[in-house]
Length: 283
Ligand SMILES: [Zn+2]
Ligand SMILES: [Zn+2]
Ligand SMILES: [Zn+2]
Image 1 (cartoon, protein in one colour):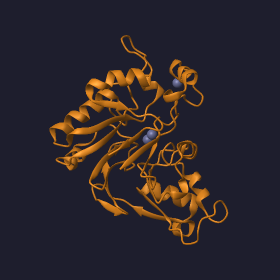
Image 2: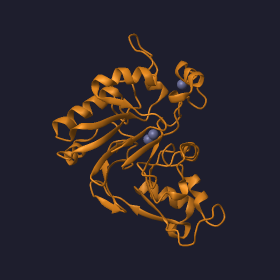
Image 3: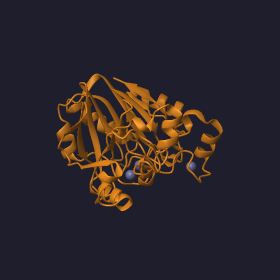
Image 4: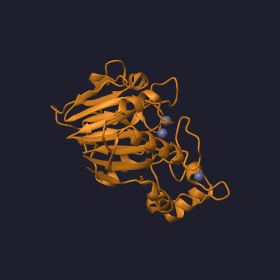
């Protein structure tokens, strides 16, 4: 399984579109790994998780071809993850030319995703080149060589926001954003499942809070519980992901700006790495 991070920031990106804070100004100066697009990822070039406002420029710069996507999985309907109007440009023949026998793009998500798609494309999504499937929490579903299980998290209630357990060829990825601390039922479901890659929401950075999103201390708590529950192997990769300038900036005495370099140094003893745009993990 090849996991490519297309973008790694929260909704306003880093630097924030209109932000003049010290962290964003530094990112503008330094560029490189300090620049972060809105979050999304691609697996093996055919499965995309979320379609952010930066999906086009992100995939273009990383050499990933959107025309080769076969599956699209949505975590929830916030605009940084569900940039629905961009999907219009897959409509043939007005906006794009594809072979006539090209199969429909298979799209998976909750009720909010379904209604968001229907608002733009009308009720008959299949006429517009999409095959939408509503997915249920804790019920695995299959496509291609993938088995995917939506797991419930509390984010943007009352929407049923999901994180996903994604399995292919014996490799298991837990792709977990946006989310606060996992509910008990989600930890319970994962019990005993050996995970290869665990990618966690770290929007809040320095903050100890874990409601709606997580900071790094909550990432450590999740790791502790997953270790206790037998989900972690010697070579499991832990990734902190989905960052906000407000979480990475040093606002309190004793904190340092969590630039890529500073975060990596801080996180290394805890066994975590920091996602960055273009990070590839192969398992
Ligand atoms: Zn988000
Ligand atoms: Zn800022
Ligand atoms: Zn969100």
